[in-house]
Amino acid sequence: SGSAGLMFYLLAGSILMDAEEDGEMYIASFLFVITALFFLGTLLVGVKNAFEMVFPPKSYGIFLCHHKIGAAVLARNLKILMQERVTCRIFLDSDELDRLDLIFDTVSYDTKNLLVLLTRDVLSRMWCAGEITSAVRNKINIVPVECDDYTPPGEVFLNNLENLWTQSQKNELSNLGVEVQDIRSAYEALLKLDTVKLHSRVDLEPSVEKMLQSCLGLPQKLALARKTKTGSDKVTAKILIANSGKEPETISIAKVLQVLLQQKMQVAISVAVDENAKFRGCRYLIVVLTKGLFEDASLAKVLLAASRYPRLEFVPMLADNSFLFPDSALWTALEAGQLLKPSDLGAGGKQQLQSTVAIYKKIFTVLALRFSPWGSSGIQAAEVEAMIPRFRGLDVEIDDAPISQGELADDANLESLQVAEQPGVNEDGAINEDGIVLV
Image (cartoon, rainbow, N blue to C red; front, side):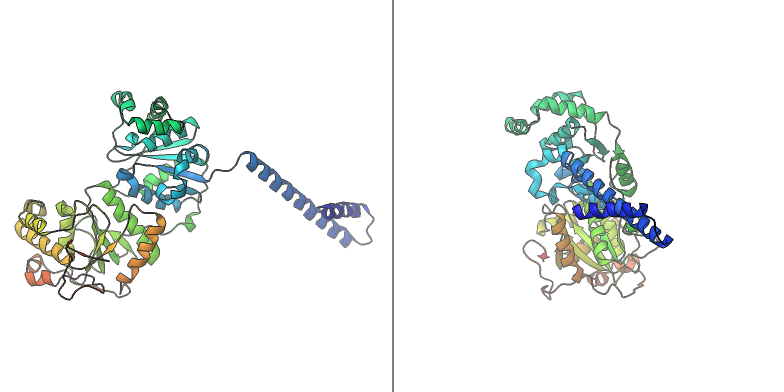
């Protein structure tokens, strides 16, 4: 720095000297300006570093507060969508397992915005209560997001907070600086805020835009840097995803899977929301195995419609550890119409039910892929990487015409239903004692 200062004074003095040529004066002036800018830049960097020492920058632009059972997969889906729009870090507990012991401090001192996913039970969870209280106490910007099953709590709920948690849980909160009366005050402040409405069964992107508009201090990505939106009405999907739509979380599973697969494979992938999905020209149909699968008439209609396309291959994917694999009792109940009512399957209900059972039995003779919707981003990335070899021949164009409903009812056609085979499946399609062969 001493030599730089000496250079500065020499250059300043050189300007005052009589120059023999005008060119020398211009060069000296140019060097003087460059040196001055260098010193100014150094000064600004020093001021910035000093400011950050006194007021350290916050690590997370957004903290996703959610109830794990009610909105863990929704939170993952929102993080993916928001991360495509902002450059800041977004806190999701399943990705930050090394910081969970400091979670209240993270909200208080290391987060710009707390985004609360208001589901049915979120305000009953002690950790969510602590996160919201920490945000209110430290004047962190809060963005409440009202989900499908949320009902704002009344005075009865607020008056009963003392009895909501065990004494051990209240002691744990107290040791972290959070008392029940603090939670009540925080909830009262939360309930006065305007909410962003979110419906899991429709496109989430407009709601995501509103959430980000309600957040403070988030650096936005350029529109050109954002990744292509999932699905398109103008592009035939190479892979479709069929899932039970009874629960918001199962809907989110399909959407997360769609985004992760499409980002990795760079092919068009869509979610088949009903029997009118574009099956023609599609190569694979992923059937997501979750609880409630066999009771969902809408999913059964999707499978019936898809089975009319002979070259469309079915790929089962286990995405719920609570999913019960079919045994003989379940098949009997399904065939008897105890799980699906024939009338719910449209015209020819009994025959449709028979065809549905045959489709499910065929699906459960092949290997199922695994996906952990509640896992970390690292686990999910590894699982998606392992799935890719299953989807072969995506570059081959197919345009098979659908067979008629009458032909579909033919047992021979159902037997020819395509399923994506994996090495290790017995030639006779044998399955294990749980009812399915798993990877």
